[in-house]
Length: 474
Ligand code: FAD
Image 1 (cartoon, helix red, strand yellow):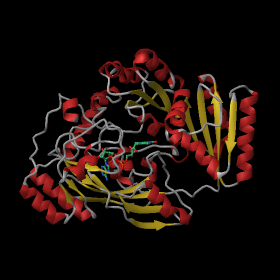
Image 2: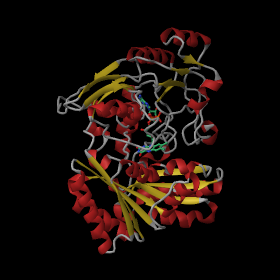
Image 3: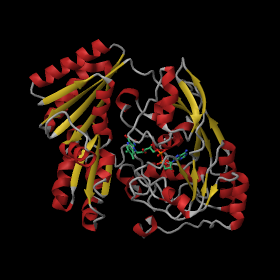
Image 4: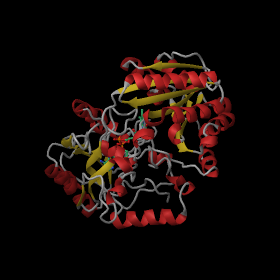
């Protein structure tokens, strides 16, 4: 239980759910109140199995009005609640810590409208990313973001974590691509900021408050998202380098030579490539290298893009930046190269216990964190791997052990976060703070900034019922 793992955490001054509350919930969301432990188990544990709560009630609203009625009631009764999307979050934000009521958004999965010309999609918050893409595809559109968890994560969860993912280099983050948000505040009021306009400078841009606030300021019930056209041609190159200096030179060359068609630059080290090969039996077409780069282009003219990518490959090999490389243009081959990178997180889970750190550091220090961590934990860990979104200088440092090891954990925390703060990085690049990182909020924010965040939280959720114990240290 998270409450045992974080013994310093005390249950807040919240009411406990009574039979009377259950009867009210049953009236608000008929036949969608779950209380059987077997039905709730999966919603009490996060994706990585690291955080476990003791929630006893799960509510499954279908409409904004139902979310509003639930929160109005919870607020009046001082019942704490945790909004839950696909439960793929990696910082323990989506599961209860104690007995918070779980509000699952999974049944709010309707597409409301799509304007094919502007590319603006309006949908309920519980729509799963893969399902949205299935609906967009016949219209020649796609979501501006894509991530390894796309089969389960929901747009509301993505917005609440400000998820980055694999296309951010090209399309930017959700602060730019989400045009509007509808959210229910802690007191049940519905805040309709569901604009579909690209330009709207009428006062404060309130929707931004819900992007990245991890369900602490309101429950996102609907969103409008600017969706780009599916590119006419996608090509991928997998490149192997034997020094990190080569990696940076290659990245720079890719930006210069591919320019407007460059859509992703992803990084894997040898240990990441080994884990997908050993634990998932995926095949890498290149031999063993210390580092790998996956460079994607998205354009409208396949011949033109392939020519550009091949000329990049020729250049980086001639200049000895890259030791080996391969280019794929056929969709199935493109997909199998992507699978190597997208499956690292899944493959690592098979090792047992995974300590995950998603941080941004200056590009020049990108891999030093992995090297230093490897030296620090030595043979106590099964693997120390580094992979991530090189284009955003976002490194995922993952350390695995057969089971939880106090020694490894003590070697890692707070050391990793201190390391990141010393080089002025961010302790959370794209996963949020949740419960796992809350003690390190000050590592990447000044005191006045955290104070203003707390004031906002107090103003919008005075009883503190929304996703308590997360984001802020005590
Ligand atoms: P959940 O995990 O259910 O919730 C996440 C947080 O949002 C919680 O605090 C929850 O309370 C809150 N929340 C959820 N829905 C709502 C709502 N409707 N209203 C208010 N609050 C809400 N993340 C990246 O950024 N980039 C990646 O490339 C990436 N790759 C991943 C790959 C794998 C294999 C996995 C397992 C995870 C990956 N993630 C990645 C992390 C995760 O998928 C994202 O954080 C995702 O945005 C979470 O969405 P979700 O619907 O699962 O939300």
